[in-house]
Amino acid sequence: MITAERDTVKQDSENKTGIARDGEHGMRVVNLSAWYGPVQAVRDINLSIVPQAITAIIGPSGCGKSTLLRCLNRMHEVIPGGRVGGVVLLDGQNIYGPEVDPVRVRRLVGMVFQKPNPFPMMSVYDNVVAGIKLNRSLPKSELDDIVERSLRQAALWGEVKDKLNVSGASLSGGQQQRLCIARAIAIKPEIILMDEPASALDPLATYRIEELMGDLKERYTIVVVTHNMQQASRVSDYTAFMLAGDDRIGELVEYGDTNEVFTNPRDKRTEGYITGRFG
Amino acid sequence: MEGSDITVGSGGALTRDQDGIWQRRRLVDVFMTVLITVSALIGVAVLLAILAYVVINGAPALNLDFFTQRPLPYGEVGGGVAPAILGTLYMLFVAGLIGVPIGVGTGIYLSEYAGTRLAPAVRFTIDLIAGLPSIVIGVFVWALLVRHLVGHFSGLAGSVALAIVMVPIITRTVEEVLRLVPGSLREAALALGVPRWRTILRVVLPTARSGVTTGVVLAMARAGGETAPLLLTSLGNQFFNTNLLQPMAALPVQIYNYASSPFADWHTKAWGGALVLIATIGVLSLVTRLATRGQRPG
Image (cartoon, rainbow over all chains, first blue to last red; front, side, top):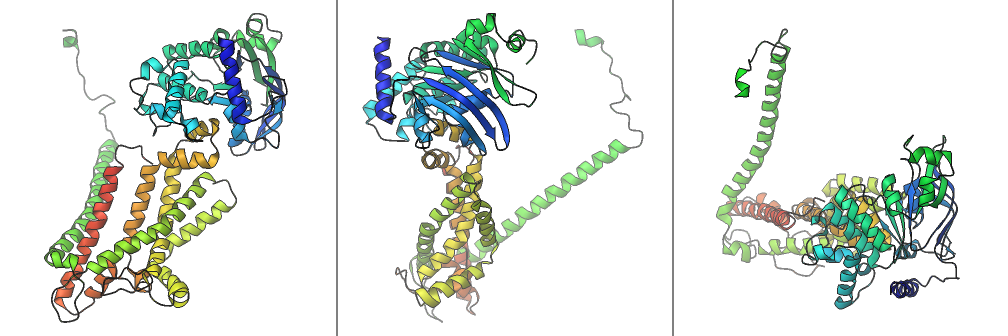
C-alpha cells in the first residue's frame, strides 16, 4: 500500500518537473563547498542521502550544518553573496547544472525552517496550497483534496479542520510548524529539508514534530539539521557529524548509521561531541 | 501575620542625597518633560488654529451651488467651484494611473533588488525629485508638454506634473514597508518553488498592502493640494471640462485665483475651497486608517 502510494508520488513529481531520471535514485553530495562572499563556510562535503529515511546533520553552532542543508535545494544562493561549489546530484542530475532552474529544484526538495513561517495574510487553507496556488490554478475540489491530505499527513487535520479560514498566524507555534510541513508536502516533493524544525517549540510540540517525522519518512526522504543530539538519536536513521576546524570552515567528520555514530563512533571528535566534552 | 514584625528604616542608601545630585536630576527631569510637552502642544495648537480659522471663514461659502455650479464672471455673486472639484479628482485619478505603477515599481526595485549596482543611483535620484520645489516640476512639464508635445495648457500636463510629485512619496513608503516584511516569508515562498517575481507580487506586496495603500493615499493627498505645478500646466478653467487635452480647473488653483482677487465673495469661496480640500484629505486619510486597521504594520 505504502509502496504503491510512493510510486504515485514519484510519478507525479516526474510529470510535474520533467527532470529526467537516469536510474540513480536519491541525493548525493559531491565535493560541496559554500561561501558567504569571501568567507568559506563549508568545505568538500561528500555524502549520500538514503531515500525514505531520516538523515540528521548534527554539530556545534557555526559548523555549517544549516549552510549545507540550504545548499541541497539551492536556497543558499538566495542570501546575498552566497556561492556554492561542487555537485549535488538529485536522481542522477546535478541541481547546480547550468540548464537547471533553481525554482524547479525547490519544487522537488522542500524546506521547513527553524522558525515557523506561515504566510500571515493567508488562511490555514491558503497556506497549505500556497505552493500550488502561487504557481497555477487548480479546481477547488482538487485543492480541497490536497489540503485535507497534506494536513492529515502533517497530523494537523483534526486540530484545524473546523478553522481552515482563520489566519495561519493565529495557530500555536507547534501547529504553525506542522502547517509549514503540510505546506511543504502539498507540492509533493521527493525530499524535505528541515532546519532545526523544533528548536523554537516547547517539549510537547517538539515531540509531535518528531513523531510526525517518523510518519513522513514512509513517503519522503528527510534531512534534518539539529543541535539536539537526543533528537538526532531518537528520530534519525543516519547521522552526519560536522565540525568547523581552526579555520572555522565546516567539514564532515563522520557519517553513518545513527546507532553506529552514537554508540561506536569512528572519530575521536565525534565521540567527544556526543559525550558532551565539547560543543 | 508574618509581615507584622518587620521594621521599616529610613535614611539608607535609597534616600541619602548628600550633594543634592538626586534632587537636581529630579528637577531636570520635570523641566524636560514640561518642555517637550509644551512643544507638542504648540504643534497641535497650530494645526487646530488653522483648522478653526478655515472652518470659520469657509463654512459660510458652503451651499449646494458651491458644489454644483461653475464659477460666475466678475461682479456676479453666487456660483460654485464644481469644475475645480471635478478637475482635481480627475487629474488625481490620471496622475495616480501614471504615478502609482511607477512609484510602486520603483519601491519594489529599491527594496527587493537593493543589491544591484543601479539601486543607489535610483534612490539618490528619487531623493532629488522629492526635494525639488514643486514649481520646478511645473516648469519642467510646462517646457515638455505645454510648449512642445501638446502645445497648450492641458489637464494631461497637470496630471503628469502631479504624478511626478507623487512618485517619490510612493517610492519611499513602498521601499520602507517592503523592508519590514520578514525575510522568512520570502524564503518560505522561494522554498516552495515560487519564482522570485511571483514571490514579490503575491507574497511580499500583499503582506505589506496596508503600508503600500497608506503611501499611495499620502501621495494623493500631497498631490491634491499642489498649486504651483498646476498653474503652469493645467492652468485652470471656469467651465466644466473632461477633455484631458484642454485646460482643466483644480481646487488649489481656484483657491489661489479667488484669494488673490479683490472681491469679498471670492475670498469666502477661497476659504470654502480650502475647507473642502482639507476635509477631503482628512477623510481620505481616515478611511485608509480605518480600512487598514488591525492589519500588520507595513
